[in-house]
Length: 152
Image (cartoon, rainbow, N blue to C red; front, side, top):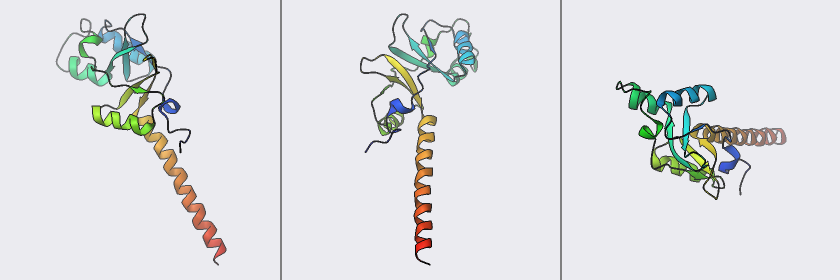
């Protein structure tokens, strides 16, 4: 049985910040700051197909920490590839399995045509699971209260 939040499409953020592979790391950092995000999806100019992913952590560890020039290095230089994606009609358990398999916490979401339509993060899934857990606890508490009231 599917619940409203059992599909990736139900949790995915539709507002995704994208950059071309040629964007410098400084431009990436500026785009992250402007979009209030910690990751960017690389796309080819004129295409909605995701090619790679760059996180704020990637910029720090791959460039800043080792003293490389963020004005000459590009997103394409450090992007995570091959890119792990998930389809918008996939179940959340499939997304979690893909994250575990690939060792990532964010997955670009693609439609059946392979075009980018969102992003889902582990944080989104954890929040949904927590909401379900809270509902389960409420059911248990209600059942106990009903039993207590009827067995006095």
